[in-house]
Image (cartoon, rainbow over all chains, first blue to last red):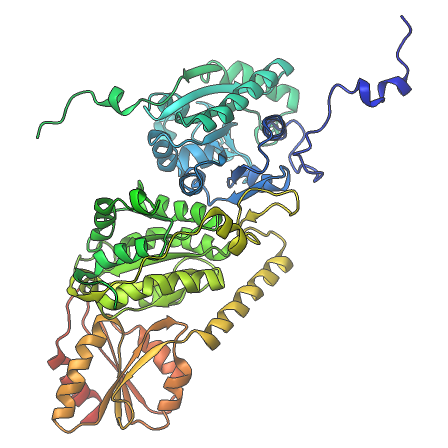
Length: 271
Length: 361
């Protein structure tokens, strides 16, 4: 078989991969090695594949991805720190046919916004919630996050996270999986091509769930922040695998639908 | 003539919301305004008009739900009382920054802190000077009757959409809790999706269409020079409000030598005081600002040329008096009478204050 020449490779019929039309041409501002860009791409691809650009509205967080509205070509709302699930709820309730997703980091979702996170899922809001857990506050310069590992050095835990002072890393995804309003709760990563594909499948399922009105779909993506962690991207992936995956194991925690009224009526109320 | 009822002020807020085509109410219980959500939940407007009523996990969540609903170009509202409004101030600032409409009702109680559940007007400065962070203003309407609780819901929505700015109905525990005869507004249907697109499609996040840029409802702009331009836009909007939206009521002001300035329930109390003072032969009038922002500064400044003094009557330590002093610009005497901590002044106390502080002083 003759070797493929460059002229053949660039022919449109030989194209096997391209940038999603839903991604804008704005250059991403993220650091090399950051997981955000990959997850953005997956969301854009899912929106394109499901052909729901006009029906999808995103809620951007406060954190490194605060300006993700510059990258995905849909309508957006920019929420205050921690409030994305409430903003998504308000939008979805007045526009139940729209696909609404929120996108938050660990500080946003699991510290300042814990109440909004828990209650949106507990109400079973028919929204998609995407949670980037990189165990640090990236944008403000690598401070300790609710998900920071025990012993992990950050700028506000310079001698390592000490549970006596700082408490424990929060597995909020496990908590959310217990809530009757959750339909689908999963933990993914995007550090290898195989994991990227799995994560995309999960995001697609979450958006499909949204149309079925079966409760909240929640995707945690265990991620790296090599700038915040102050190591190179390859070392960051390795550090994540060795230190984060044992504590934040990948896989589905719940896959079904929210409890129905009848299911949840454990006992009849006495008058 | 619309439907006549005997209702509580808080109940009327709920009924007026349904009738004016409100799309969603998000709230959290707090005394003395819990009847607003209780009335809505009992009325089940989702069966009737499709209006959403949702009890949020906190005031913080409620105001951010409003942010979401308002971003969709929908008519959304919330209500609370003073401590809850403090919690909402973050979200109100974000809504002002993102130029989102919406109606916030503050049924004030005494503070600071947990304070009391008794009525107060101590949130005047918070309401009229912004409340949250940043250089913004709210449109602030002050009803002084249950009838105005009805009328101002629709008006607040109209103004908040006209200026794409949150509007506040600043009322108090008396007006919220008292019952009066009210002529309810006729039902207006909620906007259809097509109407939202036609009326608000130029700015709302209704889903990105191929023929327009994506809508981004945000208050963020990191480049200082661009953020300044955005702020200049806000200021131009507030200036337009000052020119076009000032509302007030004047009672016996034509021949008045002394004028009481009061809003909300204090205006009702002061009205009686004006009658008592006139019976004693004193030419006293009542000036009632209806819009606390924009404040009726110009007319007060004009009156200051003719009258011997103004008495600001407020249920606080003297907050609106700052705006009166600015308006009067030293032309005549200005004094204040107020009770604090949830105590309601009596007409007799207002009469005494007028006599000792201005007329006899």
